[in-house]
Amino acid sequence: MKELITVRIYFENGQKIQNQSFWKKMYASDFSTELLKKAKAFGLQQVLHLNVSKGYFKNQSIIWGTSEMRHLKHPHLIEIMDTPFKIHQFLEEQKALLQEITTVIVKNEILIK
Image (cartoon, rainbow, N blue to C red; front, side, top):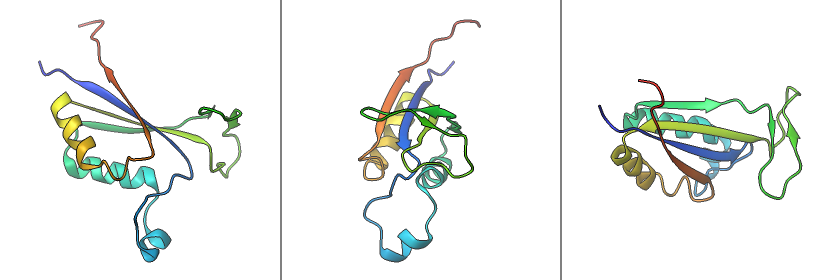
């Protein structure tokens, strides 16, 4: 059985994609969609964009996700699962996209087999 790890990528709803042309900024997908597309194209085993109903990042007050329009600072989370080798390859390839993001690698443990 292959060893799998999970990567959690934390970002704000209004996260910008750096180093894009004016037109890309105007018409490109949001950060989470871009990251999901890149992960799918890379062939990662599983990627989830988790819905955060409320939360906060360092030095913020609690942000509630109860309205139709999300606050620009509203926390979001993408979780990626694959082998350590493939995850590290992907993170290295996407270094520019992820430069202002908090990324946490969690080693998975099998509790019940």
